[in-house]
Length: 404
Ligand code: AMP
Ligand code: MG
Image (cartoon, rainbow, N blue to C red; front, top):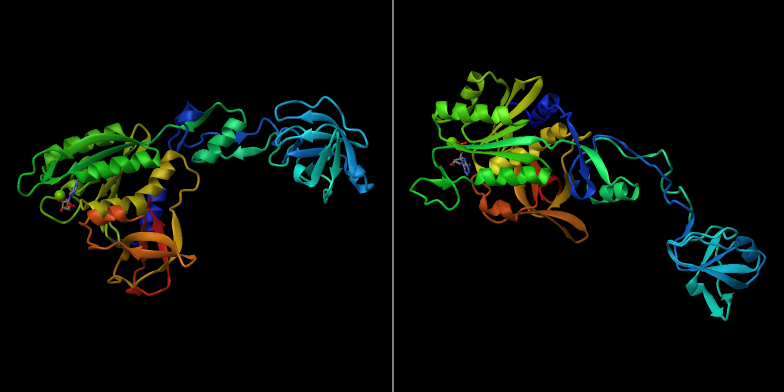
């Protein structure tokens, strides 16, 4: 059994970024990973413009104490000014509109009174350039706006659009094969014979891979029979960049996954991690045409399988996806009640982090915290971590892994 740190390091050492890329339109770019750094083709803002509705004026007029100016033009957004502003003059201007030449400062309309074609300034601007967004203040031509390896979220997609990139080069989505093992498994909607359960893991993992931005490759379920299992595992290894199987990695008589991995020529790096839930975790690698395929043998218990994914597999997935700095969404919160574990393994309790009394507080969800209890996991948005050697956390800060 190895430590969680060691397991993390091994996963990051073994996972290799995909190199193939594709071009996608921006509407399909969410959660894709940039395969190229995006360099700005223009300045942001593109030209000096007004940050407010008001009047474009000359700072020197204000400094000279002039409080009445003649309004000589109107500049709405999207229209280039045609008149330059001379001493004693102003232009009516609206948010986002280009500053006319001559003007260098905006007096907001709330601080003026319009009488005929004159404005009376009731409260002058306080500095030259007030309420002017200067060309290039936010980014300059040639600047890197988004680095290669960035996972695209809405704000980044908006930047690409604004920077005139109607499509973008991204890495191919990692293909992740998903298979469930166990004689007891049936599909949702099937009649349950005594002793059978529904293969919920397949659905949890498929959804997770979709959420991460990968492409699930569904292989269904294999019985606890080494021959059939081997055939399905081989198909998984042949068809994906990464394999997630659940079940069959424990010490039971029907747990064949590790044995089959070895028979298929896999190199096994890990079989157990000091974590609860999720102790049995097999990590193996296969070579296929120069590519290293990662095989993750997850525990069958639905909670253990998901916790293993959130805590470990996500890092490997990010690296395969081409994300430059794989990270887990750790935060800190205050334990709202006593959190307990046996202290022998790094332990996770599932619950909710919410803002209470101006601080982030973690409360475990009600119900049993056994790795077989999938039902209350669905109410959680976070996992609280109790390190090895710590039996309880009482009213103190606790490390939290966000899972929503
Ligand atoms: P195993 O790791 O194969 O010993 O399975 C551990 C527990 O997880 C058993 O109670 C299994 O019935 C359950 N289990 C295994 N695979 C699945 C699955 N795909 N969906 C839901 N539960 C499962
Ligand atoms: Mg099993």
